[in-house]
Image (cartoon, rainbow, N blue to C red; front, side):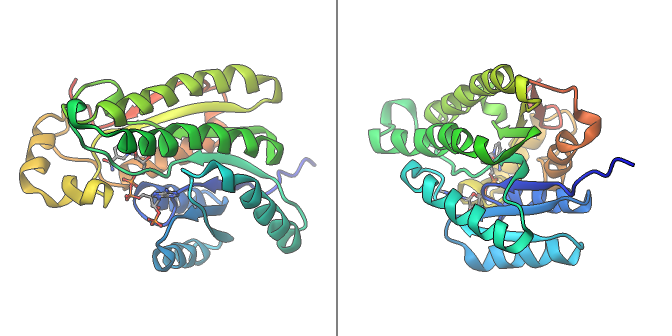
Length: 255
Ligand code: NDP
């Protein structure tokens, strides 16, 4: 009888918000989870405990995904540790989720803000994925995270939305070039979701919340729970033929 090996996901930015929800959704599907956090160790430990309470293994690592120079050391640390703990050092799903908000009118966007957006949302994703390939099992999955803002345009998001657009194009190229290994690549584009993102304004600013709800066919802002299950689905066997796609998960925002 053919026995499937237990699957293992690597999620960047799994300590809070959407990444945490993805981690929990995957754990509910029987997947073990490695996730990274940037500075919030307390939240990371809480996420780790929640995954373990669901009966899956959870490993948390500090990583700044905007700092490509740290990636070799990260993968050495990760794989050495996994080898020692589990007897193997490969994973099956890479989910590039970590990110920070940037709201600045085009005319006032500084080069420093621009570089930060490129480094975290594009350059970091590009090279983390490149370096992950040696550790990603054949027939694995890559899921990137874009934004509704790459399809519709709100003032103040020129830099942020255009780097998300870049990662959408990259996703198609990943699908094309990695198909020979059976690896699929897809990108999920959430609408506005109530997380800490951007100072938590979608969740906490009543006016912003109302405006988004009225621009959304389903009449409310998104919640983390609206997103994690879609990512878990894309990692499931049922989604094996979905490849090179942008999947918007926004409740029908700005249709
Ligand atoms: P949150 O602010 O709630 O969480 C961000 C996560 O990313 C945290 O785990 C944080 O770690 C981590 N992180 C932040 N900076 C870095 C860094 N430099 N290196 C590594 N990790 C980092 O954001 P969301 O969960 O809302 O956003 C997740 C993704 O979804 C982002 O890519 C975002 O662009 C995208 N998105 C979000 C939308 C929304 O409305 N919320 C809409 C569309 C897309 P720590 O806890 O340690 O700080």
